[in-house]
Amino acid sequence: MASSTLEDGARGQAQRRRGCEHYDRGCLLKAQQTCEECSTLFGEYYCSVCHLFDKDKKQYHCENCGICRIGPKEDYFHCLKCNLCLAVNLQGKHKCIENVSRQDCPICLEDIHTSRIVARVLPCGHLLHKTCYEDMLKEGYRCPLCMHSALDMSRHWRQLDDEVAQTPMPSEYQNMTVDILCNDCNGRSTVQFHILGMKCNICESYNTTQAGRYKISLDQQ
Image (cartoon, rainbow, N blue to C red):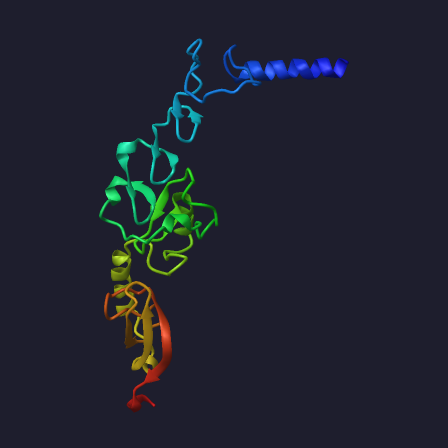
């Protein structure tokens, strides 16, 4: 009997914490932002589609995404091909990959589409959580999926040009060439081997990988 009384008391306290005096857990309620009887506000933001109650964070419901997102709405647009809401400054200025938002983040392996963390669109079109992107830059500069440069590296490439010019290779390596594949333009070229990096002849990127054996001209053999 005593335990039953305690349970009834705890249940009554829990119900009082949920809202106004008109809230009855045992009845069927129509989800809405305020109480019909006393106009008690259940949430500063309410979505009649998701039935989401929350504090005001400039949320908005995106019909195409099928969920509520943190806004303000005017700062975002829905890319139909990527299937995700993106910042308006990316409209017409990003590479689209169909339904890319339905993939998990390749860094943390967690969902991107429903995440509250802003998605970062890489030049290659792949998505990372913004926080994962920032962590990635501490270790490298390439997309973990396709190895394309994840940011504008042109300034660094010019610095590397200077370092290569100031670091001549030993005479036995000066006529050595190698076939390379560029991760940025996907082009193939044959270039002079250098220990600091091998520059793509097509787009001048150093984001390259060896694609063949070393070759030495006949007069050096």
